[in-house]
View (cartoon, rainbow, N blue to C red):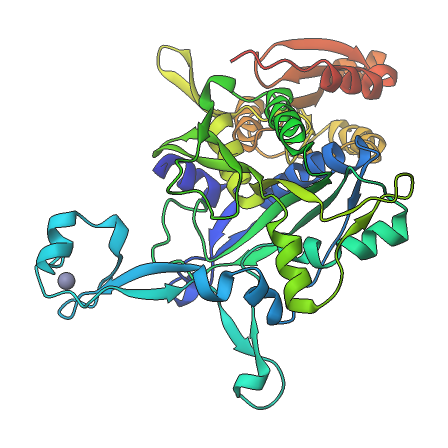
Length: 439
Ligand SMILES: [Zn+2]
């Protein structure tokens, strides 16, 4: 993980937030390559959910919601962690994450000092809206994006003429006041979610639940990831939310072990019945054909976008021995996810090669995310692109001046082929479409 963290900083994927002030715990900034990677992961998910599914619509709800939302959702009451403090060294721990003997002896696992009683700590950030800091102005930063979907379900239904079964997809920021943040961008206080809530007729929920489990697994398979680093894990009855009928996680084998990447949950009709109760509005669905009225069940697929960024970085990271004393660091991103798709490199700056390379880059810009690099030996420039995960490099040399052909170099195999300038765009598009990860 240290190698990935340091590469992420060096190459501009992820920086510590407010680093010049010593850093802000639980928050990270996405640099020039990081934001491109994050955007591409978000786009891949969005396309999968909305463009490829006629029965899913998109939504972008506000981060600030009416505080009653969080009473209805149960977050005000239940979204808590058990917390203990050390009176001596002031360290703070989640009571369920320190050894049992420390907890019963009230002994700090770090310094041996005395621990406080366990108390409940709500993970929601709260602030105040309006000029007066009173309880009337109390408002929360949303701890999940899902509630924005539930409260809008009738708006979407009516405005887009959807019929059950249908889904609503949303990508957005969420905030949790985590006591312990760790493992780089894995667990942070500010993060992004990609959630899809699928509304179904009660009785068909188990069928749809299994369908979405299948679809979400297939999605990760298509992204060219190491599929043996993925597994299913069912929630134990005691870790399952009280409303959930069934809950499975897709886990990924991160450097620190197997961790949750995405949850697929059968939430029954809990959410809509709670919002009916707290808002006094009828949230029932009326089937126009049969005149049946019912509260839909909800099947949720909930993934962390920022957690997916970490997964994709870990999955792509490779150190390859090229020759006995020569290793290269390479990020084997799927071309759909790579921040830069094509880098154009003139062999030399002189003799008009730089101008020619710039010209070719201009031509490719409309179709691909491009980069241009003319500094240093060509071998070093290839390695720089390998480290950024750029799947294709184009080298412009003296032959280009003679016959308009260029060298196309593949990141994964380091193979080079000669391609006509006129065929470059279609060739790269073909390579992207047919991309298969080889290592
Ligand atoms: Zn202590």
